[in-house]
Length: 202
Length: 312
Image 1 (cartoon, rainbow over the protein chains, first blue to last red):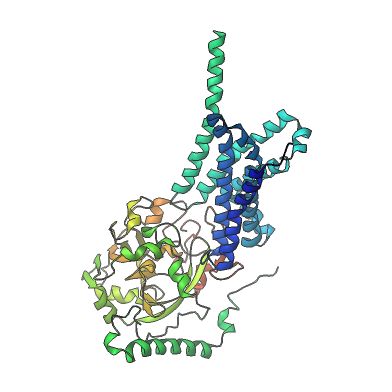
Image 2 (cartoon, rainbow over the protein chains, first blue to last red; image 1 turned 90 degrees about the vertical axis):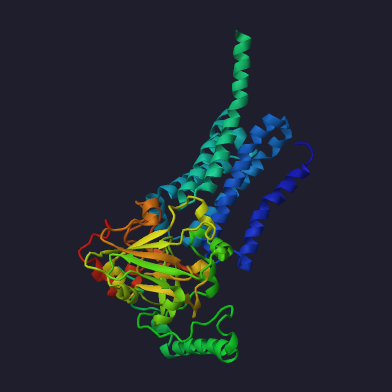
């Protein structure tokens, strides 16, 4: 580590803005007539938005050549986990009031909740292993293999969102498309490298 | 095993009836006084005209009413958008006057009713009903309306009539949500004739003693309180009596999730969530959902011998 990066502090504060906004909405009654449901939606939406941002870092770096952006990927990913955690806590704690019986029935019986729960477990595993110490302990290769699960988590989160909607799936499908495009973009440089490799071999 | 039964102990037992009736009488009198007596010349076109004195009904609950702002700002009315607040924002384009309601099909005397004439002809009463949405939230709403049976008596269903097919207005200019194919427009709903004749089934033209706001289904809507909210079709333009069970908008869109009957039933879950509990708007904890939304005494007989898992 060289000197402290002031942009990290800026990013940290930006990441807290939606949470602060949520607190304001709760206190001012801005969440409407069914605030608990709205709170679940709000936190889930920000989880998926930060997940999109985290998935966008690598393609952006490759396309733009701005390598420094990689420094912020971990914090963006951790914010995705933070909002996913708030999402789960709002559902389990505020909506179901930690009624484990009802929650378990919900998780076991409803595919979309099960999918959301699985997504959360992945994000939890990634968050726990996000420290430098854990990277060293796992070894770079294994750590990277584990953290590639984020691709699955992104798709699962978007499907979970789509399945939770009653009729108008436009919004969740937009997030699903963004995630699929971001994942597809990762394959472009790889393909180019492979072609170059094939050409040089020929 | 401890069974908590909210059917036995409800708000009815908590709020003294006299206090409650007094409050309503005071509110109605106050409204009439302010609009009618003080400004007789301007009483009719006032912004929120009172519907006058409404007869009380023995079917009304004395449970705590959901605040008016929640009733008018938390709506499912996909013709004006799919978010709960969309209808209150976007329903200004709907013109609820003039409005006619066609009642035809298997009836002896098909009729087209003008909404104002209909409201004058029918004895309006207040019905304070629980409303249970399929999304597991609920409200208590003081509707103003009249029994659907009273309307049917005027057109005399024939012996062939077994069902009612309801239709909402289809006009994307007035209902901008109809420009997207979220549902098959116009919104359609249906009832069996015996369900429609049940005294609980009303056509509502107001709530909280005032005419319906557009987002609540102005100028006239169905209210069938023992069924999930989506059955209570809004802004009705046509009721056709039919021999066959009519198609309904939600049944067309997702038949595995929304059946024709849509009776409130805590033991039959929606495929994506439990229906055992609900959240009353304004309350923190979920409460147990009652069979037929607590109206079993009046309607359970309609479904005798039917498998309610199959006919959900």
